Length: 204
Ligand code: ATP
Ligand code: MG
Image (cartoon, rainbow, N blue to C red; front, side, top):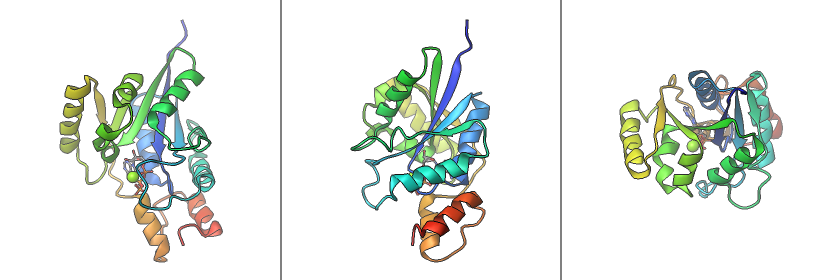
């Protein structure tokens, strides 16, 4: 019998990708013994209607640059090539089709994203299709996270696994603000991404 393939999916807008994302994905890879982690930059994220998201091609390329040094990390165009809003359920269905039967899917997200999970499209099916991992993030400590996960369990009968991650108080919002205000973004994200932002004049 062949070995179960364990595939992590790291969803996000990645506008831009930063060390918070990379550390979280690497933690999930090691804790959950994943064979690979696929970063899936969102095409047209339904929950980010209040600011203009950077064109998908830039976000895709920045993600590709950032993951280049990790042989277990990949990037997928599945969400950015889809028209209309992108939903996690469609992405999970895509990877379930794409991979063979003996593959388990893991969806990796930060605690803030999990706190919104009840508003997601087809939550029950999302939880049925994958092992859902919720990483701590500064401002979203383990205790608060665990309470929410209990609520999810009661409602959907599904376990979401909390994962403690070295606190990286970095957000894409903060990076965009720093670029706009001409402040340094060094050491918040890979140098290759920093150079890409500078070269293309992204974020002002
Ligand atoms: P924005 O400020 O634009 O919302 P972000 O930094 O939150 O950007 P996203 O692309 O929204 O980045 O996040 C993608 C996923 O990564 C989400 O599940 C989010 O919770 C998680 N994540 C982002 N930053 C961190 C961090 N510093 N630590 C842990 N998880 C993170
Ligand atoms: Mg976010």
